[in-house]
Length: 118
Image 1 (cartoon, one colour):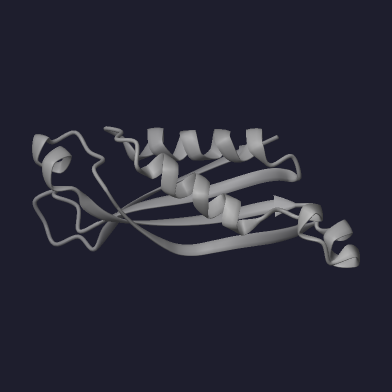
Image 2: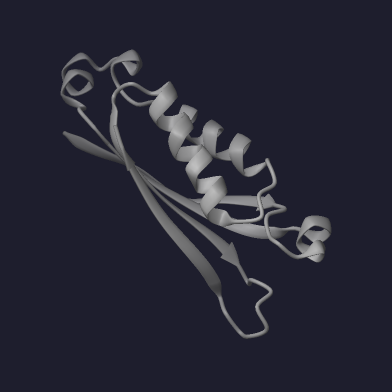
């Protein structure tokens, strides 16, 4: 087994329940942790034998571009696509953070964390 992590994927998107969030948008941070059997790729040195982190990043960017009211909904779409498109992935954990959320206080970010197993 092994882990692949993508940390601090920076994205500008339009998630949220407020009308202003739909119009103005916000900065987001996404972190992924992927658990997969990396034994074959460690021996073969072939991209086809591993989980391609370029593909992971592509999934995150595409799904974050689709507006959701809740971060949980965007995270779920990302997790489902990862498990559907990348057969080597056994477990995926995602953190989606809204930077400077409009919640009436001095809050650096709000983060949701979700995991999904095959």
